[in-house]
Image (cartoon, rainbow, N blue to C red; front, top):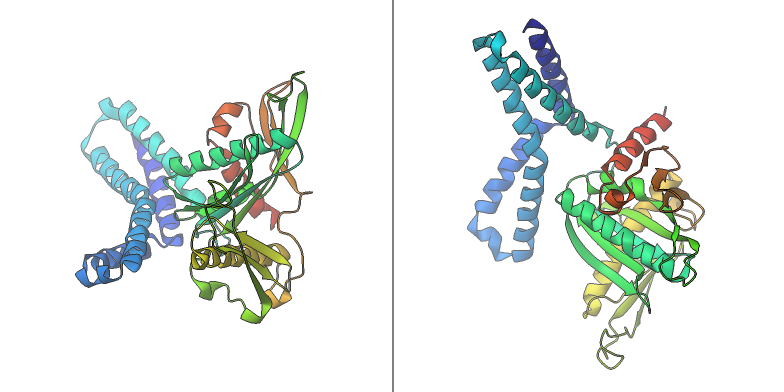
Length: 362
């Protein structure tokens, strides 16, 4: 029993240090303030603001809950150990082991050292070389990230989606909102490669296809990334309706170009030109923030022209034939259960990437 008490004491000390480093008490105060703010009837005079505050409250509550639950478990176990005898040693040992596993998962938050890690994420998937197979692969990746988002209690929203003529997805852009969504997903930024027996090939030959995944921090506040209006070129054009060309006859599609870097964002998903412009600017701010991090630029003015996530930066292989394996080429992390990975089980890749990225700095 004494050995168990020492293990519990060590875990409690480590928990307290991490708790302080992450500012959990400050988050608790922020949650309490939000709760008071949401309770004010006048807040709901502005439905959009009220919705944002309510969403922020729910997401923060979800982040804090496991920390507060583990804190109570540690206190309860310490109390039980003081009042119990050796007959309950096995039961308490099992409980402590479970708490240690929970703590190991929670402390990964210390690896979120990117300034935008606590933001939501914008994910853009583009089918590459491989024809219909590549478009199907892009669709598989879209489903994988959306499933992962569900598992992580992230809220998803489609921003732009272009389907292939015969199936699959040419381009998919969507947001995933939750605390540290970008931090958890930045491991996915780069080129993904699929090797399998093609279901679209009558000879059932092995096919290699590619998809580009761009993961951008979601910049909700324009003040975080300030763009000079003189650096923007905004074009309006007629978008194609989903039910035939005559369905949407307004010039609602918007293309925004950041002239200094040549970065282009085109959106036609919304009926309203204003909504398309707002979405395009939101994605542009996110792209420029990502580009600024990649180039280690101090300001937007220091950015060089160039594309984010070039097609040469292959990061992961998904092999379905002649064997089953998903392997990250940077971290060497691999999973043999390809189906589970494509069903959204990518937490291992995220965790190994965060550790690899931090180790690479030293």
